[in-house]
Amino acid sequence: MEQNSITMIKCCDYSIRTLQEKDLRSLEWGGEFTHFRRLYQEIFYSYIEGNSILWVVNRDCYELIGQIFVQFKSRRPELADGIQRAYFYGFRIKPAFRGNGIGTALLNHAETDLVGRNFCQATLNVARENMYTQLFYKHRGYKIVAPESGHWSYFDHLGNRREINEPSWRMVKMIKS
Image (cartoon, rainbow, N blue to C red):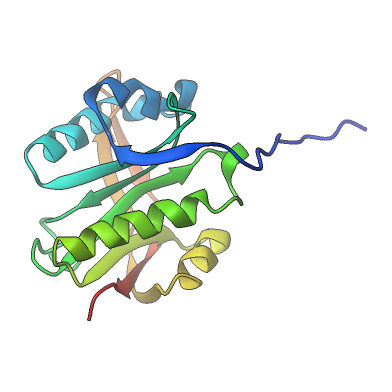
């Protein structure tokens, strides 16, 4: 019987830095997320305009292995109001690098940056079905505060509108008192 396994990398030299325009294609993770190409470009322009910050984890100075996007202000102030509350999204670590503290380090880095910007709360949405990730956030101080419909849409790299329906929980953490 053949086993399906993922090679786990136990240690590596990595750094956390802001996304650069030259990194945009790397966010596609070898084609897995190519359908988000236009969305990544929009998010990058939001960063250039000062409305967000985009953090990435760089392995051995060249390979992106993780990301988290932080929106400072949203049309939905319960997520990000530009003053006290910011919204985390697009948070992911490549599977081979999970379980080594890299995701925790990235989340801590993003929270610390928000504190330095005088934000008091971090919000995020997590899929209701994703119990593993809910537990990850709960262990780091996030609490479920409201249900989210999880309905949103975007235009993929071919210009097709894609509709997403992923019921979620909104979670909040006080990062500064």
